[in-house]
Image 1 (cartoon, rainbow, N blue to C red):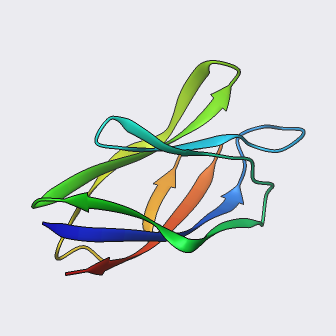
Image 2 (image 1 turned 180 degrees about the vertical axis):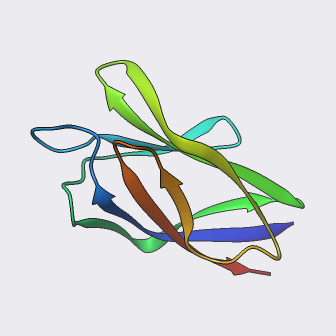
Length: 103
């Protein structure tokens, strides 16, 4: 088993035209974090948000509109050889997920 430590989620371009985005971080189909971020801002996890995985893990970022999620870009598969950040991007939004791996 390996450990993945998410350190920050940065919003470079937000999905919502007004107000803040309400991103959701999903790991292997399981929601591990919900929050709110404005354009140009980051959410930092202190201590890091940790998940364990065996071989690889699939991560996605959704923008929540009430109970309706809208995926930001394509899901990213992280393995032991992956490097930070994971990028989630559409024509309407751009996020970077920073992480580090622990053995």
